[in-house]
Amino acid sequence: MKERPILYSAPMVLAKLRGIKTQTRRLVKRQPSPEITHPGTLVNSKGEWQFCWMKGPGKDIDDDEIVGDFFRCPYGVPGDRLWGKETWAYWGGNEYLYQREPGAVQYRATHHSDLRASDYCRMMGKPDGDDGWRPSIFMPRWASRILDDIVHIRLERLHDISEEDAIAEGARGPQPHYAGGEISEIGPNTFRDGYRELWEEINGAGSWDANPWVWVIETKKAANAQERAA
Image (tube, rainbow, N blue to C red; front, side):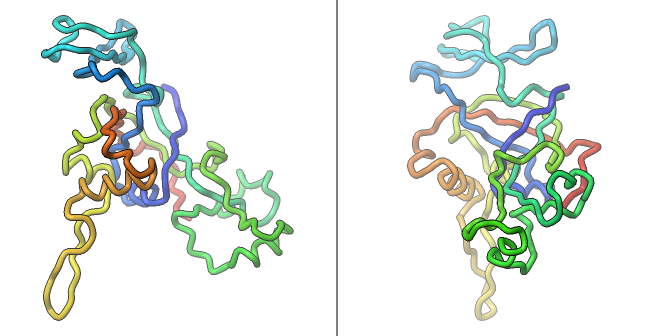
């Protein structure tokens, strides 16, 4: 079993903490040529999952043409683990002792303190404009509060996401709104629409229309995941 880091935005962190996010889609870094019709999957003699790009009318590696070499998902294989990175902060004291101080790490997604950035900067001796929050990319393993086991991995087009998958992604959906005794719906019309909005918020305008190939990673909370909701 291997552990690898993965970045999460604040809405996805909250969905993870609520236990409703069991899927994550990540852009395939090197998109295949337009002739590709579907991916192929196999498990080799070592039990490792491998993928390949294929073209043809079928869905079987033995029937269609393999385009290029076999490759593996950069996020791991079923049985591996992913630990989440998110925006965080050292909060007072000696940062080199924080691994032994459970309450010394703050998480931006669930930060409820009334301490203003200017007060924090003055307290920590930081320059003006530095509110102490550190990008998720810099989060060390020990500070992470999200740990998941990979259950399944597949490749698919972004637009293939179903309504059920969008819910499993933690996307925002229609919300009931009460006005004048009447119930109306606000927000996206569907959870799939909510996921489209989220994808474009993260990847930029027009990224949804491009309909790229994505990794679909299904996970479940690791049995020994650390409970840290600060």
